[in-house]
Image 1 (cartoon, rainbow, N blue to C red):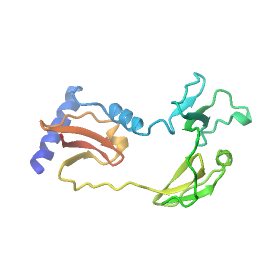
Image 2 (cartoon, rainbow, N blue to C red; image 1 turned 60 degrees about the horizontal axis):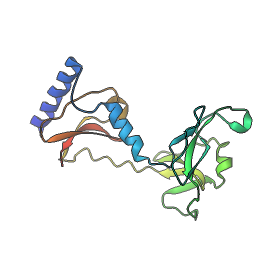
Image 3 (cartoon, rainbow, N blue to C red; image 1 turned 180 degrees about the vertical axis):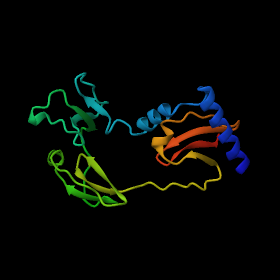
Length: 176
């Protein structure tokens, strides 16, 4: 394991000195992460009028300061399901601050440690974070454990390994 980690470190240093590599950049990893979000929650509207995927509608993004009801022109939005699923208010791990999505655009709330904000077609609130990083996974070798640091790195992985980027960091993992 330590030889593999040392080999990855040499490759990182070499890539940093040479300024090029065959591995995807951190931008590519971030783009892949954005694609995982799917059509729900994607950017829409704005000055260019970006559309949503079929079955989704564009609503004002409650996380930004642009408010079309308060004179905001060309505000960006987020895509939400056109016909939302039924909300019970008992969704596992979610605690609602409001069950009115239009009210959520005006509420400023902070979630306690271990929870992160959510905004959906049923309202807004705090949900249990799903971050469970396994830094001891024998099939993965982390180069950095901070996604912000990963965004600045370019690195190569040894033969038989491929790069990965996620909410826990970045590094090399065994290729399938």
